[in-house]
Length: 211
Image (tube, rainbow, N blue to C red):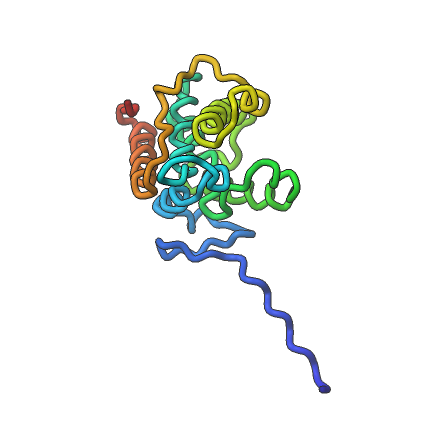
């Protein structure tokens, strides 16, 4: 058949959110980021590829709450610091939780998208586009402590095996953490409530830490 070929359609690179926003994955705008979408999405993304014990998936929202608790226990921090800890995995409300071994296989493309989404989320809530290195290291330390307890309590790791991958926690005890997997709607609610409490502190109100 003669004639010019049709131009190839560009692949869709956006996702419609329940808020009605349309988030461009390649060039995300802070204007299209909504806390309701983040809380909803993270509460329905399973950590450990869903390979955890319990009646419910252990969600990224619940993990984020635990990391923020550990971070506060380990550091003197401002409300901005706490918000960055709570939102440390926020891009996963769009791209899901990819386990570390697979991230290593995928390489730089994943990290590029992740960093762009993180910047959009941070700017939406008045935070620096990129978490300062020193603070990022502190949040990562809290993240590894959370991973140790998740691994040993939920994902079938022995303490020796978990210590090899994540390090042995010091100064943090399991009884202070809400490690039992909770229903998605509860994780979503608690994540949103914690966000609002930190936002109140950022606005100058007293910060009420959860028990």
